[in-house]
Length: 237
Image 1 (cartoon, rainbow, N blue to C red):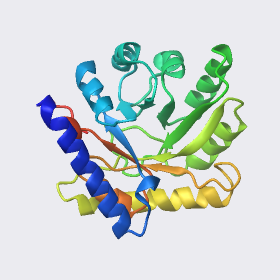
Image 2 (cartoon, one colour):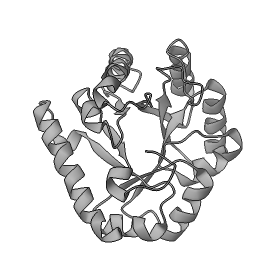
Image 3 (cartoon, rainbow, N blue to C red):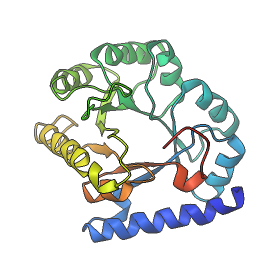
């Protein structure tokens, strides 16, 4: 029920705070991205009133309608789902951050479209495939250095960090090796200045069922949907 949303959100924030403190981190290091895919704009409006500042959407077309209705003031829109090449231009126009960059070709396309749309800078995260699941996308670890080089050579893209989507485990602890590996990859890239100067690079990892484990392993962005908005049928966040 919509009336439960503020209470759910407050609970998630308390869990984030407690987990961050337990890991010796400041809660402010962790950005909560409310995964709003499949939920109506009216529910997102309630979330904004309750203090949500970042939304994560999977599909460009669905997000477009919500962004047009709700606007951008005080809100950041993150594309967290796979980006098809034919939707790239609209994504450049709509989203503040793209988490799902997964190929050299898409990086070059986004850079070109930014130039055409007169967008000076687009922050992107590279989605890394750490499990090799056929149903999920992402750059392989072997392909990561070349993709990082392509992004850093682009005129309009800024490499903001890495993202991963591990297999779903009933026991959240089983996701820990995937989160740890992404942190190790981020640290290696940061040591080489991949994120610009001394920037550490974001880690977008962890969802409703495992975000606490992700925070323990260094997540700086957690993507939480069901625990905030409630169940929504077959889709999972």
